[in-house]
Image 1 (cartoon, rainbow, N blue to C red):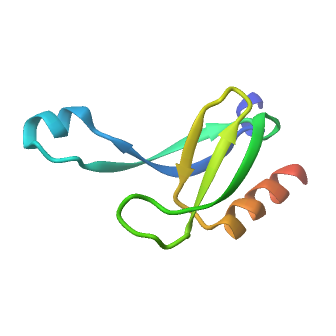
Image 2 (cartoon, one colour):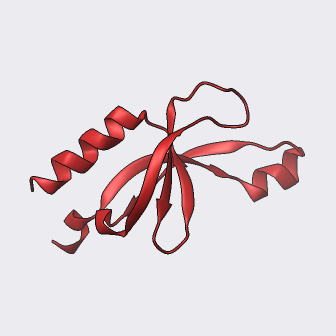
Length: 85
């Protein structure tokens, strides 16, 4: 199947609707799928709330950047397991 070519990683998204209702910046758990051959680079990162480098910053060739809420080692396992399909 075509969708089997994609890798799925957990992310958190900003909810504009909730922010407008509550006045607070709230993130919701979600996911994003991308083609592994579109990967430009990746590395450990932290979010604004802490400085623990337990997330993975991912850049795609398109210029899109996002933070996956998994450790780099887990992300590398996803990549390596995907290439064995």
